[in-house]
Image (cartoon, rainbow, N blue to C red; front, side, top):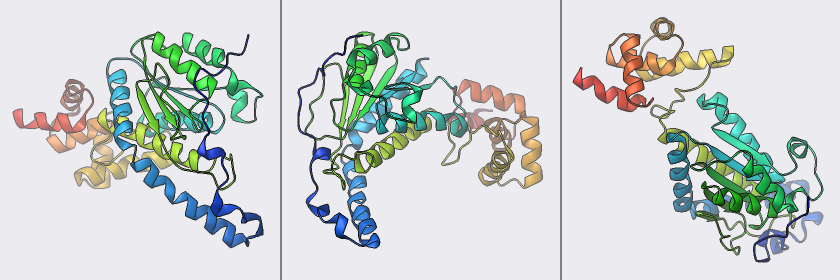
Length: 307
């Protein structure tokens, strides 16, 4: 397959430039190196804060996609792809979402999660082909790239747009321009890296923060939490079963025995047990109320007043 050149105008990325604060890093003490890295890392949250309105737009696109039976896709290469894969994987046990709600596409495939695959990120056609087999109209596709121009990612986003998906791009290059076919553009200015070009550092930290906030906010909007509690988690081991009991007790004031009995009556469903205890209805009625509210505990509780 022929490699397609990047469809985006080439621009210098700040992440590739030398950082004037770290030119003597190889002369520093161990503590000096770590302090310098930490000083630079402190810039990341402020850079992320400046793009929160754009991130909110991306969240709303994702919520709309998932509410209408579609999916969210992450696309990345190198560090960006690995972070995206990690975020998608952790949502299943944390929020008990279907495994295909969030799909990660990494340039070079699963092998590239462990080792570098030469030229994988430069192949725009491969990114487009990846979308052709998995994306459909109504999905939301979020690309991540430190440079703002990774061909695999841009090729994928433009193909996804042609297929009728909405798209977003997280760029670690504030000088990059919005590529055609991208609906939401999130350009984070983290500046030069401590080690020039090592985008696993500040650019990667910014992407991790953005991804975690993006997916968590999406889950909250979809009712996968109650207050700040993980009420949709899947209790697959002893630790999580204990956490489930603690969450139920914390949210309702029930003691451990009452919580255990409520969970048993609810068939292990924490949300059903919550509504059962907080509304004073039986488990079947609680399940029906949750179904009517689309799984939102808070909305189901509002219905208690009408009973």
